[in-house]
Image 1: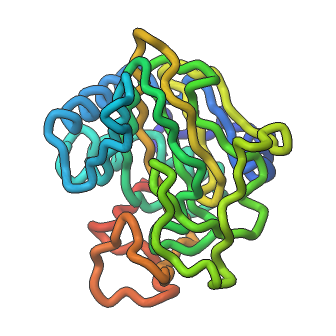
Image 2: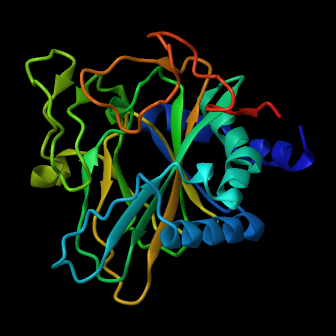
Length: 278
C-alpha cells in the first residue's frame, strides 16, 4: 500500500465507519486533492463535449437551466479511466465497506447549470442494475462548491429498510414493472412529508465527497445558484459480496458480460477492474 493511501485510510475514523453503516452515508472532507479534482474537471468537460450512448438531458426545454447526465465515461475518457483505476476512491470504499477487495463498476456525470429547476427524483441505485449484495458503495464528488439546498439529499437509514423500490428515471417516470411483485414496493412520497424522514445533506467544497450505500433513497433539488454550475462525478464500487443479480426488467446500466448467472462474482477483468488492493 502506498503511503498516500495508508494516510487516507488512517483519516477515516471508526466513527465514520459506524455512521456509514448506521446512517448509510457519510460526508468526508478534503479527500481528493487538486490533482484529482483537475483530472475530474478535465474529464467531465470532455464528456460534455463528446457525449456517449448513455448521455441524457432530463430537464425539459422550459427549464431556465439545464440538467445533463452521462454514464460509463471511463470507457472513452482516458483521464476518468485513470481516476477510476488509480485514485484513492477504491481504498476509501474498501475501508468504509469493510471489504478486502474492491472492483470498479461505472461512473456517472451530473451537471446542473445555474438556475436549473429540474429535480433528481428520489430513487435507489442498486435495484436499477444487475448487482446483488450489501457491499456496494457510491462516491459522489462535487467539483464546484455546492450549498446544502442544491446538494445530494439522502434518506438516512433507508438502506436498512429491507425494501426495494420501483426504479425511476431522473424525470420521476417509473420504469415499466408489475407492482404485484413482492420484491418491489412503490416509492414513498418523500417530499410530501419531509419532516417524517431523516434527510441528510451537506454544504460541500471541491475535495469533499459523500459515500453512500447503493440501497439508499436519494435525490436532489435543482441548482438554486444563478451563477454557479453544479458539476459532480459519481462512481460505483463493488465489494466482496457483490454478485450478479437477475432483474424483471431491462437493467440500467446493462452488464455486457455473456453467460453470467445469478450469484456469480462481479470481479471479471476488464469489465470490473480490481482497484483494491493495488
